[in-house]
Length: 460
Image (spheres, rainbow, N blue to C red):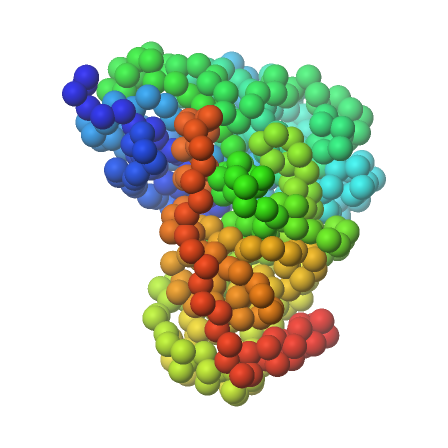
């Protein structure tokens, strides 16, 4: 074991996939494994298959333990998710936020309880995207089980607790459109106070805090060192933000696009317009507890709906044909969230004839939606693309071509969440920016196409 190089494991549970990444002391990826993040549809409600993820993770850790001396594990997960636990484990399955919790009466009850937008920075969202709505429904529908819960753990901290046995809360997940947090005051919202839930949330810890070491039985099972430390962890889009947040004083205002199942535009000192609740704007909290103006849409999900499961490569000619024909995808193609929530997505104009044209149309769509978000936030300065869309060679140039002087930097790290999580373990190190500005696509009809798209999208 002593001959192995030191490494860090990032456990990244996204809404669509889960990933384990082994990273060395210089931030270089040594190994990576992925698995679908499945949702079980059976009773008592649609829920995350946490036991399958746990078994998969332990199996992968056994393999990774032979490649490096793993000093730490850092959990990073999607938001709007929490686990109710007692000393033995879950008292209820972890609810999938895309499930609508309850009926119209439940929704009306919760609407009367939730704090105002100017208190929480959290817009009223569909399904279970407001975590407070999930907790309220679980308390009303399963009172005996809810009463057994000793703690409510935000999702990254649930995995940290399973690994080391130490319970904690952390601000990036608490302040992620939950209705549970008051960003301006740095404390729980009036909803938590009225419901009497504050006692259920463990002590708040910094995202980079070491909670403890790996449970001895897990160290023995996986072959990991007994002194492997478990880091508190972070909400995924905040992990993407972290590198840029740490270099903000040197690099100036910017907007970071965290791209994956969700596209989240986070304006770091660059927003000039007030947040509008109905537009799915919100104030997320960064690792220091400061509010960050954000706007989002379910870009990865919508891209997949338009392009298919295996998007085909396409060329400038495919884009130019769609623009010339005025073939447009109008929002929206996901049932959850976004500035056009409730509108039914549709394609107008000549329907794409090939897989390449379908992928090109999907790219045009997500670029236009992102441009809409940047404009609505009044975002200025550089735009930095992190995550899944860095693999699309056209997304950055198309976005850059929609505004004079807009500098778009596409990260050379395909997973900003992994980099951000690694920085938590390497806390105190100087964060390195990665990537270079892309060349804007200045096709003659591109901005006119955008203007026509905006008019059609507003009409619905």
